[in-house]
Image (cartoon, rainbow, N blue to C red):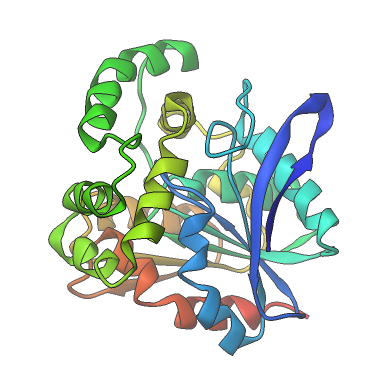
Length: 275
């Protein structure tokens, strides 16, 4: 199921709900540039584990309206969609940059978040200047990169090939198992508005709205040994700052593989903390 929902101020958030027809909820916070479509790769695993899997596009991705978002407002948007699908409590799963939002949501809504999972989350990076400064500093290079992907190209196969080519070979090989139309749709949705990615990066590469030390729910972290996008050292630092957290290192594993190859194991771990 996918749809959009009205949010305060006239904005809309685009979301997807999959997995089991009924059961506890795992809310997925996507990386960047990425979208709710990343969660669709975990649909089958979620059904087998018996959990519903929810993903919401952050502002500036797909049909989710752009605004001066923060990690705190994104957490509030997620809770609004969770209310819409009838989930009072949930586990959170943050992928890559999505982990910064997941941490904030877990701290801001401790009455609703039963467990926190973080996969390949970047941590400890700081860009100087305001959010607006960072957005504009990153904009030229990002615009050049998007132009090379050419998301406006109607040729699904060509677009999917360029999207995969931007990834490490093991991650690209995983996406090669997905149909070209699905990969192309994900690329178009992720790159619909440049400021989705730009604001994500600007917010993530500074002090987060809430600190890891404030997390009180059970927390599990998964990192890939060969991940250059989210190096293991950053995962070790983050795990060391979250009280009682558990860090799992996947040998010989790169960024996307840390999630896509291990969906079932991750969801099984999180589901143990759910009613």
